[in-house]
Length: 269
Image (cartoon, rainbow, N blue to C red; front, side, top):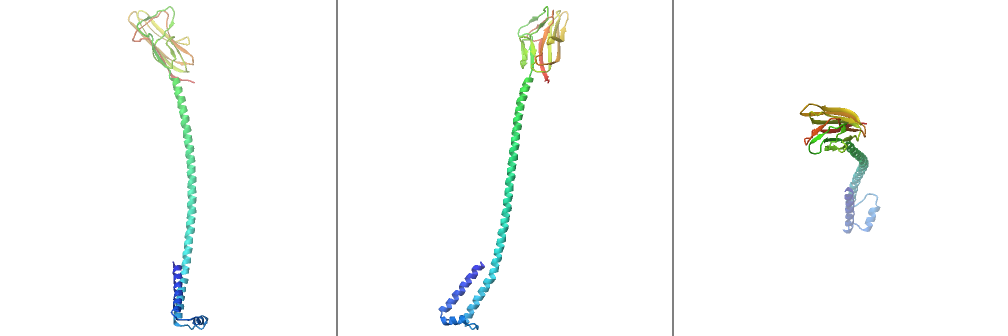
C-alpha cells in the first residue's frame, strides 16, 4: 500500500514540473542552465519543486523498509503454514494407516468369529446327532387289547409286550419282546406282573440269556402283584427281555397291569 502511495507522489511531482513549464516559468535554455548549474542558484519555483520531490522521495524511502518487513513477515507466516500443513499431512497419513490397521484387525476378528460360529454350528449338529443317539427309552404293556390270562406253560417263555406306549430309538421290538442296546451305556429297566391266586406269578429279567432279577407273588386267593427293576451296563448289541417262569401265569386287561420299561441313563465309552 505504501509503495502505491510513493508512486502516486512521484507522478504528482512530475505533473507539477510539467505544469511549471507550460505556464512559461522556464524555457529550454533556462532549464539547461538550471540543470548545469552546480552553485546552488535556483529560482523559487524550482526550489519548491525539488524540495517537494525530496520530501516525497524521503517518504517513499521511509515506506520501503515497512514493505520489506511486511514481506518478510508474510514469508515467515507462509513458511510456518507450510510446516503446519506438512505436520497435518503426516498426521492424516498416520491416521489412515491406523484406520487400515483397525480394519485389518476387525476383519481378522470377524473371520475368527465366523469360524467359531461355524465350528459351533458343526458342534451343535454333532451334539444333536449324539443326543438323538442317546434318546433311547421304551415302555409297553403286555396285552394290546382285551383281557385274559397268559400261562401257565410247561417251560419258561419270553413275554411279548405288544401295547407300545413309548419306543424312542426303536430299540424295543414288540414282536419278539426283546430290547437290543444300540449304544454302550448304563440302562435302567423295570417290569411288573399281576395275577389271581391261587396261581403263583413269577417273571424275571434276562440279559443275553442270563437271569438277572425276579418278581413273584403267591397267595391262595385274591390279586397278586409284584415288580422289580435293575440298572445294567450294556454293550452295543446286548439284549434284555422278560421271561415268564414255567408253571406260572399272569392276568392282564385294559388297565395294563403288566408292563416292561427301560431307558438309557447315560452312555459309556
